[in-house]
Length: 124
Image 1 (cartoon, rainbow, N blue to C red):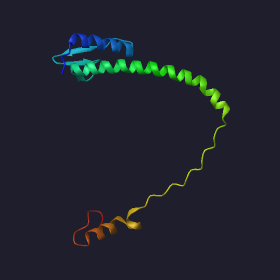
Image 2: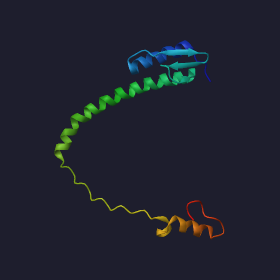
Image 3: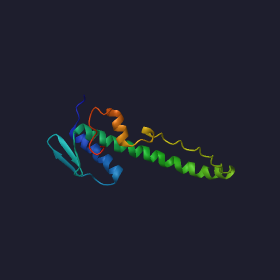
Image 4: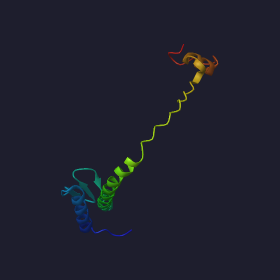
């Protein structure tokens, strides 16, 4: 387990938070714990992981934003070339088998207990 430098972790977290949300976090420091924007208390290692996840989310969102723009330009040409397929006929849904073969709850309890015990309240 490596030693984390508190000042470095806080600086990295603050930079990642600003990049992700566009504002500085309100970071409360308590003995051994940190609270971000008045939320749940977390340890220093969890704060480092949270900062890393914010920077990772920023990288993935910027990469995914570039892909849909290129796909949207190519998509209308493909859609115009192929006619829309007709939806297939849906198969009929199988009905669920009901337990008890149409018996009432009182009859099921009577068969289960074989009249050796009393039936539950409300089934007499």
